[in-house]
Length: 363
Image 1 (cartoon, rainbow, N blue to C red):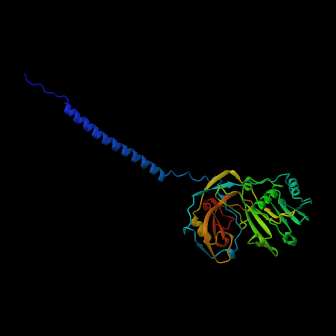
Image 2 (cartoon, rainbow, N blue to C red):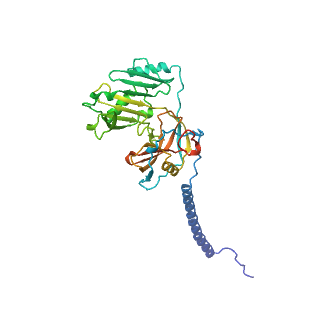
């Protein structure tokens, strides 16, 4: 009887197959895991190095009025600018910045009546002189001859005493410390005005000055000084962008403080604070800083503090905000060029295609 052939898998073959399966399966698993982790790492790297572009600036206010700087006299403009920043080049900035709405007070029927209460807080009892439809002036003679001018609509004011004609104020001056001087100024304002929150937290700047004839000049120390100046600006925007005015380093509030022994400690105070609605904001594209640098070199920037020579050496370029002492509709960013001898120059930072430059000396 013929032998029957066995077509099944032998034990030896099964063992060989099992070993091959385990070997190739292990290699495949390793290759799969390597590919899995490598592809995951590559995807994470790609996302990190190729982030999704942010949405475009909102530009919700439309075309903005260009910041209105005072006209810089030609003699105040350096003929040459030298860039000497720590890196030797212009810094990099974001492609956009925030713009804030500044609401305006409308005329009110009770503005004139409210102004009387305002003047009384500073002990002005006389009938005001009406300079125009919105500016009133009071005067008093004691303890110093003093003038108060008040804009009844915008609620800004100037308080000026005739301290220069009182030489006794220069004798035995006991001047306040920075802390005391700033508190004295804030307390003086709060007599008639609720101190705005973005001013109440401001640290302020402080300087010694001396009287030379009818001028006030910087003093090197307290022993050389007759008075101190205090300047208050709003707290920095986003806690990092400083505020600048058009008055050569002065704040929106500038005060001259005298002898703390005197009844009349505040000798002069200018209050040019206009409110900002920090909840109404839009983002706008910025012009390249190189373009701003070219404008400054071409004499088209605003020189807030000039230097005595024909050459200005720029040590730092930053982004700040311009807070004019005259009403403006928006708080806008500016490029700030600062350098040796206190040089300070401004150029509007908003892309010029979003600026109406009809009434400004800048393009």
